[in-house]
Image (cartoon, rainbow over all chains, first blue to last red; front, side, top):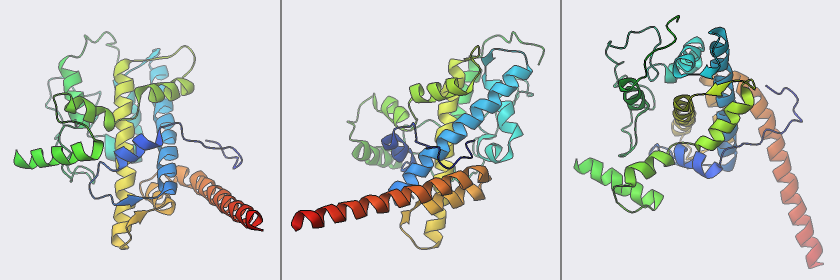
Length: 140
Length: 135
């Protein structure tokens, strides 16, 4: 994290797309340019943070490829992140035949019906789990 | 079913897409940040010899969109309670602090402060220039 206030934090994400994602929530009225900028910046910070933490787990396991389960562990370790991602990511300690977490667990965002045509994040993981490759790293 | 159809039509209006089978695919991309940007930032963070599985990059896209929704929702809720219609920078900072991302809030507040100063300067410059032009 740059402590120096002179270091410019310019968002790397297309702001138009960030705005669209923000507005997926029908309850969102108007968003000013400052808010858009800060959401873009903080999202990038979050991405960097999660990537860093995931890579730490990968390194702990003496692997070179950052995998889903490494991300899961990283998410579990950081409470604020876990608060909104935990029920979406497969917990690495669970055997694959255990039923998936309750998709209807209410979260602030989940209370609102998702727009038609969007995939919920947990569906993404179910799809992945159903065609998961043979586990070659059995030392976990 | 009807309700879903109504929501779909609303989204068609919003995104200007035609109602077709490609709709689901289009909507999918609209709610995620580009994988190229996501991948590039991840690469910057990771050690040189590390690789990222495709699955991880895609998951990161999802996580990041969830983060955006999560923060925005919280900021918007604050506005609603205070009967304001527009979410501003302070609301976002507040939301980040509330949600446990306070280590972002500090630097972002400073950045916001500077951003506002720059905007004020720019507005003043424009004003001065237009006055000079009139003289």
